[in-house]
Length: 192
Image (cartoon, rainbow, N blue to C red; front, side, top):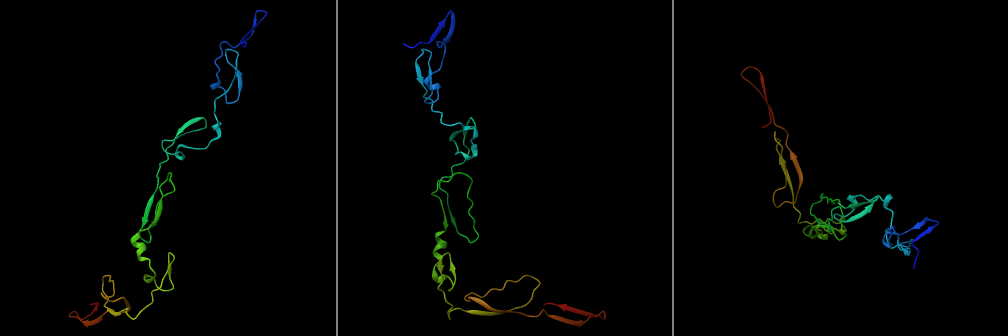
């Protein structure tokens, strides 16, 4: 039987009877005596002093908990899982949302656009996204020459249907005419 109280000459030298320490209160491996005087070994598995931790709630996954700087933190970082997006236009950008990604998400070129990236659609000597072009100019290409008359409004000059491109566009001079008027002066007419 263990000794838990010592009285000598009417004076109490040691009294463990009111102590409340248990094995669960002591750090793992630390020894002490309980109120009965029996030796106990700590079983508390606190595994770290979190006083110097730097994690914030925004860096912990939403709903998950952790301890930092002596406090329990509940995460606010969104779980975005697998993000998959398609690029279908030349200038399109993909924005990756802030938060956790599980690593299985992908960004790829839209399958319709991928199907267009074939050697025969790309001019010979040009490589686009690893596809080397083989298209050579042929006699089947039709060029067109056009004449345009100036206007006071913007004009877009395009090849006619069935024509591949414009080989030349001739813009006529702006018409200019002078004539005498009834007031004895000269009227200048510019344009049509």
